[in-house]
Image (cartoon, rainbow, N blue to C red; front, side, top):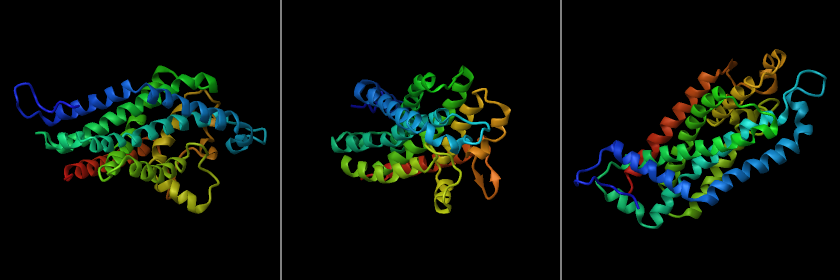
Length: 289
């Protein structure tokens, strides 16, 4: 259970309440060894199935087939696996709010002398932190797919991962705020999350898509979190200039109204999405009865 007051009986500040909730989310994750093991199992499965199993068939989609420069499909998909692990963990974080409601913990928290918005923000920060850690665990598989991770690259990836996790964790809390059962949350979660993640380019290049799918990809905020991850990873692999110059031909980089989005512009979109989702989550938790 969560402590909600200070030792001298004063009402804790909003920052203190956020810190308490954040620490509780981290502790809950750390104690759940099955969850940690599961976060490693999914990347292995997808790397084996999509990375190794489809690398030959997908090679022509990433520059192969004509003797020209190529990007290894396993290298291409690796950042997508990182993103997928981060995003699933982020939005799944909302289920803890539903559990707390079912077991009466949320009611005790909401009647405590703390700002309700702090509860939502603490859960979002905790979920984003856990998701970033789970994404970092995927780095362990980089040597298996021929991806080189330098300390500088890791430092570049962490903020991108956290920003994406921040938005989706807020979205998960917002969804969970109106759910009365874990079953309902899981159904809605799958209905919303799977299309968003699979239409973000985690498994395929964003080129040659049907017009209707291209529209969905471009209005999907997760797309703008996957793209910078992939570009950062591939740019750090020491690929020939002939390949780096042709990254847009391989489906890297998002064009909006003819404008090629930069990594910085991608991150602005992700940040705006995160702010909107967290404001929504804080409002929905604040009006809980």
